[in-house]
Image (cartoon, rainbow, N blue to C red; front, side, top):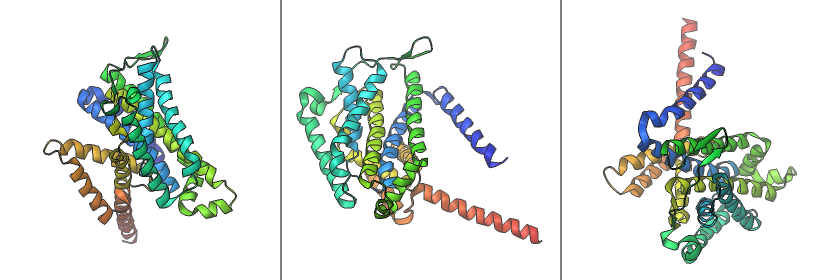
Length: 331
């Protein structure tokens, strides 16, 4: 079977598995998969900054929280609001926050960019706690009614049904992951990589460096906003912990462990930590300790992350197979 046939076959098998997943594995593991998918989209949005543009942020959770709170507040305050406009309000909240910060952060890089976002993370977290009449403070927002997703005469998904919510979440998150992947394959995606490798050269080539970084920043915030909005809908609540600095490090851990050099690295990292958390909580509550140990081991022995390890193993196998094939020809 040629490579041209293998890839479509794998994609078809993956789509069939996703379709049958809730019927094969049940509600518990369907919810587990949705949680993983939300973290994966959050990590991919972060990797658009770190892996593709070379911008390290310690406060990416601000956009996740903005998306979640935007959707939750909209559903709480606006009666009869349909589902898609509620999600879009969350996404536009994240984009609006990115637009506010762009004039400052797009002109910075390296440590300044990272520390500015650390400060913004603390500021937003404090605002969420103080604006109790809007955000619910430490209690967060909960109990808002989630409207169904309906296309008249075509389809209607009840968000209270776990299986129907699974299909809706997979469609939305999968679509966003595809859009993010497509973005990295466009000329704009190549400019992002150029900024990561040598931003001065990109500037000398005539590209508008600050504006390009701003666009990448806004797109990253938008995808994080989708993840936050879907999280609020899935959990049926949103709290200040979503804007905590620890939540920002979830995306960082998934990206580093999975491998920031590949688009699929953060997805693999999110899957690794989801499985680790599921297994660890059965024996101990020291999930952060286990995550920290895994991060240390990856940095020490696998600096390219899980995807880098897979590539290394693949290259060794290909060299071995090539050597065997060459030996068979000569014999």
